[in-house]
Length: 181
Length: 425
Image 1 (cartoon, rainbow over the protein chains, first blue to last red):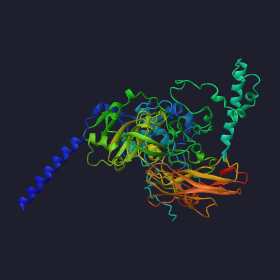
Image 2: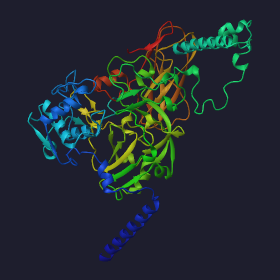
Image 3: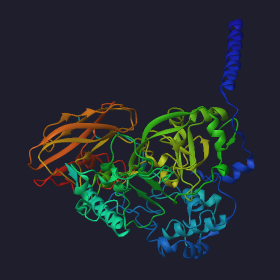
Image 4: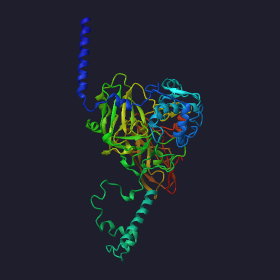
């Protein structure tokens, strides 16, 4: 029994070594190691749990100033929409004949709001806002939706702790859902 | 059969010819001769028994077009871009499907969708970073990417909002489903590049990010990345056009267009999706009960008759070939059925070879039009046995606000004058 165990262990080890060698052989040695600094500069993804949110904070009050300057031209003074998407309202309409999908009624994660504002907004100058101002605008948009109070100040921890109204509104893909033969 | 647009082009051509002839006369050219009434008679002079104008003098010299462009008589064949879009930075332009033959979309007519405009990227300064749950985070230049063993494959790409479920429905095939195109793509299988970095245990997704002003981000399941996903740098033999992601894009055959991330700069291997804006607030499919389907990747089987189709006209009774395109994100097209009697009877169309997986497939059906009003339509069946549904069947399940993944049959009405229009408009 003991001998069998040893044999098994030896075989497993040999296979692992051979397997590794085979994989290494398959590699072409193309590309160079990416440095931690290079990755950090580009890795702007924020997880739905708030992972990778940067230090800093921003108030809804400050957010209103930034929003008026940077966002209102497309999204409307109070986020009612225009050339850009409507951001406010619509809660309770998703099951109606005229669903209104906004940050408040539809977005499942508040952390995605930080991610998207920082990577893509304002449309004419993305990645130009400071992290503090991104927190501030996110806080303001959430306050317009009644999800945080008007005097809210958000940082990594408090933003990640928000539960959005439509958090549980998504289901997996059941297709094919039309069976016609 | 001829198309209205063709009629217009012929008229334009005649007018152009007349102006050219006039200019030649005004310039004092005596080649044609003042008394040559054929010149003044317009295009008639180019028909038998006369010798056509373009045979009487040499044409344009070599080098007059260092990069070839279509005939001036085809200048109406362009992308279908609405003149009333709310904005043009995040917008789409459609392929003119009813003007095209075969299964390959010319690069200049490939449909476009971008979310932060089309960036101008210097390939020498473009980098791809591969990081996350890998043994060796790597950074690649374009030269590096092109050193990998290459592969070429023909696949369609289709936007998932093609079209939406609500009226007004479009008038032409392009208006309806012009957000699909097909090309031969060249690049390196993604799995080859992933092997360079070494996937770690727990690697379930790869988050792909573009180097555009939207830094567009989508999460791709690892199974797809290790199956037929590619990093692509060429399209139909030449480098990608800027609108298609120059210098590098992701190709995930059969998955919705948005996931084929263009201007690719980063791949992050993760345990779970990014839940980015593009896969939560957009590209999720609302249902009548208020829930929404997420991660709806596959484009289901679909087809459309492109000739005769909306906006065209049958000018004579008798033989007309019905032709169109079919495709499925789930694999090969197994068959296409055509009905010429408003859906009462269906007959098998002929599939043009090659029939390729996750590629457009051209179908043809011979038809004798008796001059009476008719409704013609096609339905695709793919290799999984799935049959393209009607709009009513889809709406019965998904409602009218589902927005994405409408793969309905689209019938065309032909009236007694031969005018072809959208039968569901």
